[in-house]
Length: 435
Image 1: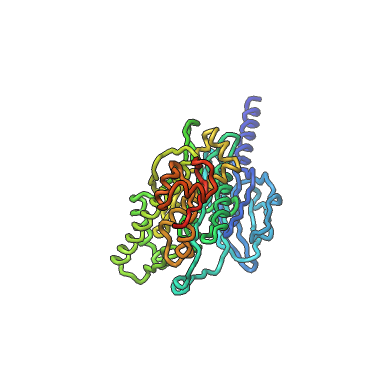
Image 2: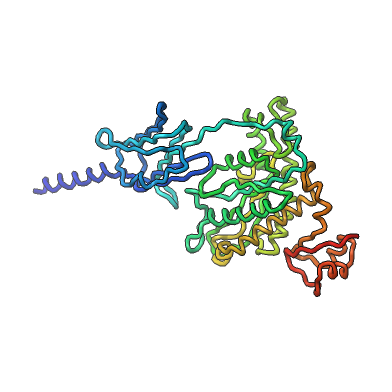
């Protein structure tokens, strides 16, 4: 009797092991150049993948797994997938076939569990697009062009970023601020904004920089919301790339033939493909030195404007080796809009009015920086004199300081702006009387 019970128990245990591997959930994310399908697993699995053509298919075989989810729930619209078929092979293995409308480049890989997700199997289907390139002559011929600001909302898709009270997600907050910032630049006749991430999907850091390069961006701004283990941590921060990070990236950049063939410099172009190693190193070093200098200078303008809106975590522009800032030729800043882990700041960051104010502070800082440093050939360089007739008040400004700067009097400023009081507020626009 005991032997019989023991055998029954062993059979149950073996049965549990046999069914241990399960696909418990399915998710699909679409970005402009990629479709990602995530299979949520209860444990790691063995798998193999291959592609077929005529017709185009991607096939994934997962060994000893049970499907406890439905592919029919996935929205395949705006993806290269026509349908997803499944079938059981050898009694326990699962074959998944992605029928495709056209050819794709695929990548299948597993991810181990972390504090947010369990084990996952990821299928990435990359759109195959014909590469186009702009000629150097065509770029140089641009006159009175707009200044292009690339705006990167951090995280996205399966990467929510930091989580705040009430499960406020960083990826949502920063995209909302980014969209507001883009509109401000688009409404300015001398600027245009480019969203690196337009929806809820994830982009690798180097892909974000690639989009900025393809857009011929003059500047790159990455927006984030900070988090810390203590809810007391607070304040906004502005970061530029560190010198150490720049040095390591320069070495990586020069080591890549593809990078050397790129036209670098955002709107200013320079090809390293035909340059000897020593000359290429010098040219890139000069480019990165200028880039870092511009980043730090612009960061100071942005920080002063944010200081009038939010508490600052640090009173100066910090430097760190953030990968998303490592473009050797486009000035860049990473802005932590506040601590999403701080209940007070999380509430502010979720507020539409505050988001708009944060976007306006960043916008004002960038405009002020470019008014003092207008790139040659841009519309702003032509319109600078006219634009300088408007002054946007910064924290700490007084009417007497502004009057002194523009060689006028406080009375003239009061009269010209129909002001009845000398009291001014951050962000207020003042018309400067002609001399």
